[in-house]
Length: 160
Image (cartoon, rainbow, N blue to C red; front, top):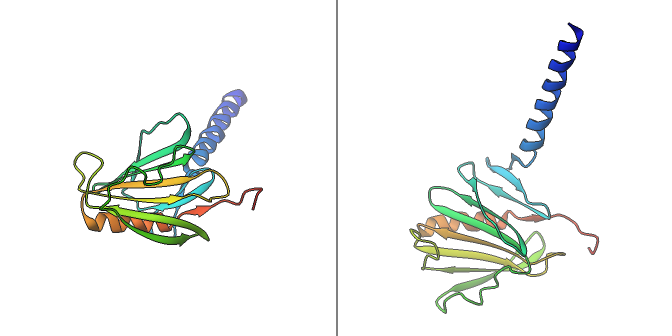
């Protein structure tokens, strides 16, 4: 009988540990969303953003989708720096978590079904370059994506 109790307790502890480990990747953000922990940085995502598959060979990437926005990040040497964006792109320089970045927005969708695109490009992160790109259905969706961009927080590196 005690062996069954031991196995039950071990399975329970394992299950709770697994739940804790998985939920550690997504915790509550300060604005009623969730904080996505992406290794070298975090960003706050509204609850309706769900993780979707993404892959790359030379970078750490991730992607999320909501009803109006498809958002992806690229942390690595292949991170886009607007070199292939159209001339009609409107740019602004911003400071996010004490890091200089460039945001570009254009009335052109780079993904099927989206009418707008916006991107933030960090070059000096203390590590690899980071780009977060959002395909948006409306300009209001782009404004929401920019709120996510501004929520980025970088983890300290040994070079800082």
